[in-house]
Figure 1 (tube, rainbow, N blue to C red):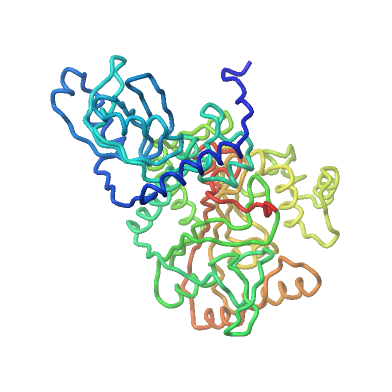
Figure 2: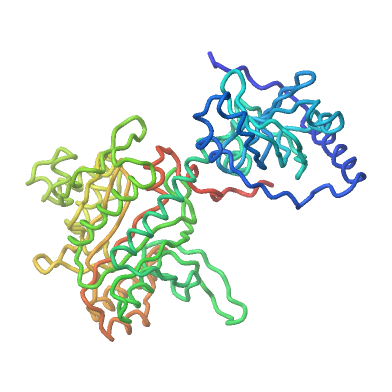
Length: 500
């Protein structure tokens, strides 16, 4: 049985009308939205400094405070009443006594609504139950809330409402606030780590004349002044590599990218990732560094590299496992090493799993297809998968030892891709040939195939040093660190169908 009863049915329109009437009365009496209250204090700082004191020590100090925030709870008790004020840092109790405030001000306090934003002044003390409180000497209504907040025990119960009305979700759900504060710490920690390791943060265009850097379907728009079709960025990769050509040897960008594709618990049409590129690094250097970035970010954002996700432990502290696609098939798909190298067996397994296995697929493509179908979801602890087929890696450098595979890796945690990196292709003629193959696929109807980017080929012809590059999915990383089941839980304003 639920611990809290279901919220009572209320006529929200009637409540809004009542609040509008209160606002009308305020307007008739003078400025209804004053802008002259400057709080000096924050709830969390007051709790940290004075919360450990007993009242016998605290009250004689006469600590004067000035604080502002939203009224979240209120208890009217005759000549004295209590309220709870919430600011950006936390909550603190207000104590309103009629004798201290005066009859008129006390009456105004009693008629405040939950959700109103107030400025409060007074002195600190502790109640008999030991709760840090502000004994009010004055209270000022700063913003009248016209819409009632959700029931205090239940908050926004509907998930879509939480995403659509994130402003209400953040007011009423402390866990939601904590998630997004962790996200902010994560981004700050990554930025600091990158700069400390010699990387320069840069900004590259979000409007592209040619979409590139990933196999994805772009959003299309039109630039009126230039009178040309433009595409929202699907990845910053090709511009970042142009900067490596230009002589900036280590660059990174925390970027917003856009892909006109499906929506799921792991996908949002606009998303955040961090891409970084380092001259004279290969995919082995990238894996070492990616491990270090994620480990550092976890400790800084949530305090530990040992996490719990969906009830299972995830440990970022030890060295991450590394295996080839073929080795992963042997370990997680129940194949022998010989079977993992047998095209007929792979095709049969794919068909048995209800997955496509086109006749033209090479052995490497069949291995990769089966890996995606049955192995990815099994990789719970951090695992780098390496040696991807060249057919699915149009921007990665082919292996000198085996030209059918590339020096590429993907990092999987909790069965999800978290990062993708490789030794970059810096052979301009090879890159041009791969672009031509992608363009042919697009002509044949593949909407996610890449365009031919002549300027990027020209940049490579100028000469790019051996380079490693990697992209890390920030949204999925925040999901992991905050134990969030959906990407929508970690994006402040996720993409939703129009409310109308």
